Image: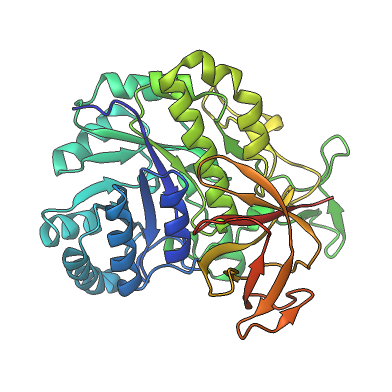
Length: 410
């Protein structure tokens, strides 16, 4: 039975961000455990946090998928089995796997948990999708190198019950389906074991064989030297094409991103999807609003990737490797104390008298002036200079749990 409306699948790096993803519009959240996840430097979830996150998500009707998508060596297989035994007791809604050996162990150890095949498995044709379906997969994640037409062709040649999951937003990798060797070569940290250092964002020079030590810049029309640095994928303007292609799950990249990124992207795509299904004309009329909102988190300019054909020089950023950052994340609203102020774990400095913005899950953005700040003991403060300092704030207005505070940068 095909979904009436595609699933919105949001990443989360920790329990707090999972709660943000759920609150701001996710239908499903994908997370990494402390082992066998391709984001070794992400904070990831302990088993206890995973249990708490799954319970919170399920209370809100949201699914949780756990990534176990490393390319496993012989030395990993025993621990893989032990890990899946733990997952079988924790019971996420699905496991995301790329390695066939790991897949077979998961199928044996976790017979009641759905198995999804990661984009790392290079899934570019319907024969591959059908192969994995024959082994018991309920969903396959398409390679990012596929066009809308190719995905539609896959949909037409696979069983209805086999779901297609596709990345529609976030960072793009320079290597095919993320299989990069640069990080391993330069630093010994293997991208395919979850430790990528993102060397595609570095600045490069060339040398000529007979002139060692003389470094020549790599230039393209005097625009710069960041030749591997891709723009970020963004399909917020193309929801109709995505839906018509038969994609079942719309996946957002970013398991190492902040709560501001997760809240912004989840809320904006939630609104866009819901608007389209309510009335395509409503969706069309609000595209400028979606574009404005989606740019309120950090990003590296935007591209539609491979969806409308092969990429060109226009998909690369040649003059820098920095993000565009229009807003700064200040923190998430917690519980209210007896004095009527709201708890907050500060993420960036702000001061009494500043005008900041309250981002609400329902789509509202409300400007507010910081009336007062105190420390945990109620002592007044003019500002909160220490990262992750626990404070209380008064913004002169009623706030809700997990409202997000941000500041627009000049």
